[in-house]
Amino acid sequence: IPESGHKYYLQFSTEDYRTGEDAGNCLATVLYPKKKSPPVVSIKCSHTKDQKEIQEEDNRLYQRIRHQSKPITGTNIPDSYGNIEPALEPVWALAVAGSSSIMWEKSTETLGYFLAQVKSVRQWIRKDDFTEFDYTVLLHEIPTQEIISCHMRLTWLPGHPLKVKHFCAADSHGVDEGSGAESGSAAAPAAEKGANF
Image: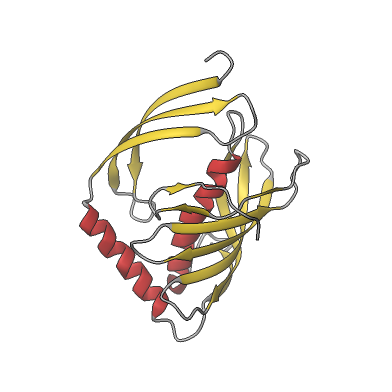
């Protein structure tokens, strides 16, 4: 699109990242603006799971987190053999959802990202019902093969948007990157600018 950037039309299928089950099909448009800013995404999906089933899964995940006898902490998730301790699966699931908002913000037409590992995670105890975690995540940059370290603070309560704040270490592109409060659902994070933390 002259003066605006490149627009892509996509059709793709999705799957549950844990079970590999079909999760539905999506149609999307993605506009990469000429100026350095996140892509503009419009997406419509048909889901194989109904909303009630998704809410029940969210509640089961939340209850696993809330019923820990002490704050959750962990390092190197998954480990060097690709294993995740069952007790750490809920914090891995939240890391997948939260880091997707970082990857969305950092991605360009020529660079993409994957969550490689949660280097460390620590749960904060709150007086309200929200769960809150500090993460250090490692993102694998494609095609450069570089590993980018990002600090991420994530706050979540079922039925409310997932809130993510992040700061990524300077990378080979010579830019310190960070964001303010970002929000979205655990299924589809969206970004919203705010103050740095």
